[in-house]
Image (cartoon, rainbow, N blue to C red; front, side, top):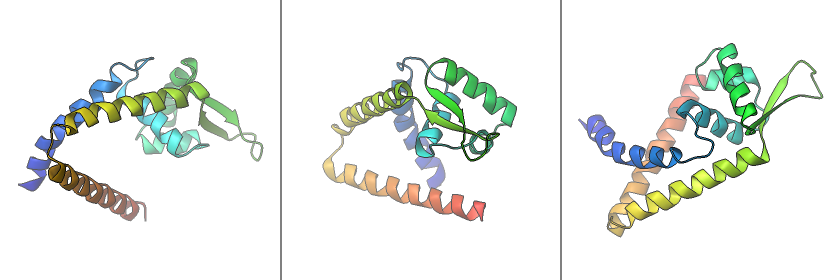
Length: 144
């Protein structure tokens, strides 16, 4: 079955990807990292929006943000348009940390890809791009 084979093959990529995060300072849980990545992609997202994206309750998302804010990675501010609304943004430290993590991941994946024949690397990239597009299509369909 293709799904099983892809899942098994992807484990090596996932292990390589996550191993780099273990060295991040401060050390973050997968959920904390996911929240920071969501805020980077959607600056100004509100707490409810973040909670929905991480499949958490607003109180749980708020506690998560408390920890990220205490670590100096996230900033919560009231919007000028609606004083009750809180927007989430990464701090400069949060942006630098994510940039550093991204560069380390690229380096780690690059070292592994150095062992992969060029034509197979290109096929891998094409397959991953097709997978990413299918994820976007499925997400768009589920939101409609």
